[in-house]
Length: 416
Ligand SMILES: Cc1ncc(COP(=O)(O)O)c(C=O)c1O
Image (tube, rainbow, N blue to C red; front, side):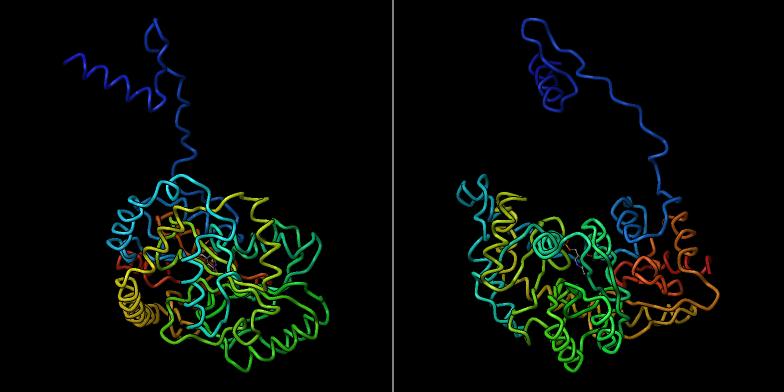
């Protein structure tokens, strides 16, 4: 081979960190690579089923595993061509976008666009009342830092999105729960838990509830807000599934006018989970304090991600993509519900939108046992108690209809 080929090979190995160049001496192996640990190969079957179980198993799963328990769409359901086009556009932006910190509040045009989209859900928030974050999770984390002291009590739904629990544990607060009904939290239990536990904060979903797929009724929303007002409790409404809804369900933040309710959201479920970008919409004086907290904890915003998300959202193809996604999900929900029923698994309700079917297993089956057996066959399920503070959902399982295929049904049939 030619000398230039050898030089190129050395340069690439240096760039990869495999070798180092010592001027005047030559090239040397940089360091010994540790041998691969066999215990790190394959899923961890011994992990206890807790609020982190589904996330760890789904995020660590490789391409061969099936993930009917995970909370996101398959990559092929995302708007790939629109994202690629937006990446090309963003690559031609001024160099500041490619290399500098974002402004503390975040990209102005994106905040304007979010403000207009919130109006479609009857939430009035001026662009200056919107703070961009690096994800929905980071939005909730920042709000917990802002609102809570260790030892405070926080109320969540039972069942609820498991990462609310995982995050609250990290904040060293007490967790109380309220049973969830097809129309929202059970208002009698809600009233009694507020009297007994005096929670500082209630974290719930807006629109489509995770894991049940239920939506809030106006009557329940009214009672919840009245009780929150009486007890001086703040509410975080996590609106991450907003784009899946055909017709928006009532929003606590809309009725309340962003007084004691804070709306958060992100673009992980419909646009890209990789372009980390979310937002908080709240009272102006809280946003002012949250900006300080954002600088203290993350310094600058992810300007490149914000530019990408803005470019995708303002592409006219995005709304068309969302329309077809909603139809695809509707079809998948009906199809999967029918096939689950054939296995004796009964959906708790038929959700109006979204990807989840919260379902009851046949009597005598324990969802944690089933999830562990499925994992040994490369299938990641979402057992009920991962979502339940009171640990009363061992007979339930959350299924993601977009991640379910024939192999998964066969595995489930054989396990049952
Ligand atoms: C209700 C809910 N909130 C937040 C998240 C995470 O959002 P992000 O990717 O923006 O951190 C998820 C992901 O599954 C979710 O289901």
